[in-house]
Image (cartoon, rainbow, N blue to C red; front, side):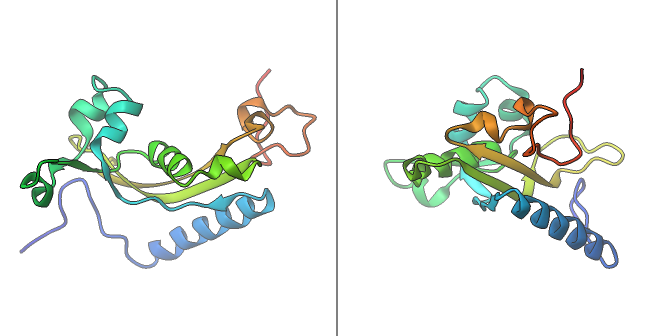
Length: 165
């Protein structure tokens, strides 16, 4: 019998309803703070991560699922593809590629999506996971970034977060 690949799992009811609840709640909270969802491809050019994270990091050297695109391998320009190990680099790529900086305003974006890491799965760890996170971009980023929010800020995100003393 064929089973799910080690380090992955099927998400079945009633657990799917819990995931929908968490995602829907996150979307409502993000909307309150004028964050908009961005979806980037699950497949990315491996160079995106080797350039942004660093060639010698564990993510790039040990943990990424990478392969050569066989269709392009026959041409003069081959391409290494990977399943995204994290979302930030893809969000920054999309921000630059689609010139979101030209909008002249702060781009308050968030993502919800799968990420993949090739590591020996341990108890309660998986090779794929779903993450959600806000990613403010543009100017002024400091006003929307929780690391720079103060207890006096009425726009502190998330609402329950306060900087430690």
